[in-house]
Image 1 (cartoon, rainbow, N blue to C red):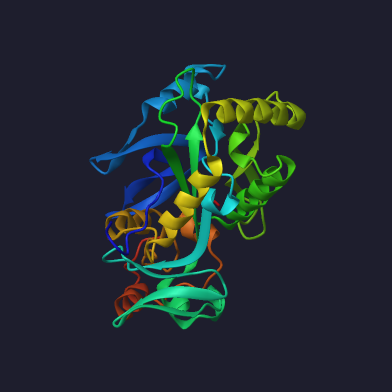
Image 2 (image 1 turned 90 degrees about the vertical axis):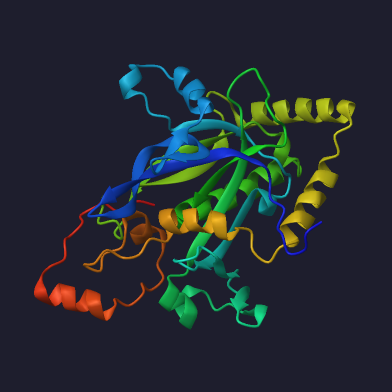
Amino acid sequence: MLKGLALTPPILGRIAIGKTVVKDGKRLPEKDDEFTLTTQVQIQGQWIVHPVDDLLRKKLSGDAGARKLRAIPVRLLFDDPDLNLRASYSVFDRVTGRPLCVGNGETCKRSTTSGVQALPCPSPEGCELGAKAGCKPFGRLNVRVDAGDDPGDPLATFIFRTTGFNSIRTLAARLRYFQAVAGGHLSALPLELRLRGKSTAQSHRAPIYYVDLTVRARQTLAQALEAARAELLSRKEAGLDQAALDEAARQGFAAGAFEESAEEGTTVVEEFYPEESTDGAASPQAAHSSTSPRPAPSLREKMDRLVGTTSKDSHAPTG
């Protein structure tokens, strides 16, 4: 096996709450008020919608044009919350897409000229590199999507990526709560990703959206636990070893210094770590997703502002 290569769950597609649009010649993230499931293929800069997205929308009631996909039935692949959701303070090279530094607020792995080093992680606010390079929380959640009668690939997942603090905090709490009430059998629970909205002072009272994890609609927690017990019995009869699966995933994640490759990193940078617009305003997603200091404008940007040649974007912040 190749050394230094992180082994991550197989991915069928992406779960997004926005898209990338071209404005003033720049590709910028634009948030939405519903989920979209896409493949991992792009055509003309846009992700191709996954067939599962259409299956989920057909189950929605109401006029086809007005139906919003704001809930996705899911199951988790692992019992350990930290294997399903990996969250860290992250910095990427905006040119190459390579991860530069990943930390948890105490320690970090940082790519240097002499290799990857383990260093203290003071969080973005207290880190010189983080302040300059735009370090922010970055989370990845892998889920199995229950789209119909066909169970599909039992070990393949859709991935939801976010730099939104609200989504990361809510998902992390929910995963631990559900693990506790299910007696540690988190992967057996039938759950649902749900899009929620809120307004804050930071968003100037404009609506922002974040992702929550709940029991499924029209199902109580007791009913979800009963379904989990039935699922566990079925797995036991089939001989499935969940503990071994979790351990294999744990070793796979630990095999590499960073989870994202440079190839994946370029996509992550475009969507979650865009450069500031020339008037100094960050993209909508960056504006709400991070509280870390923004990189200082370049001399060219300062001169552009002085002579009044820059354009101004007015996107509502989202989270």
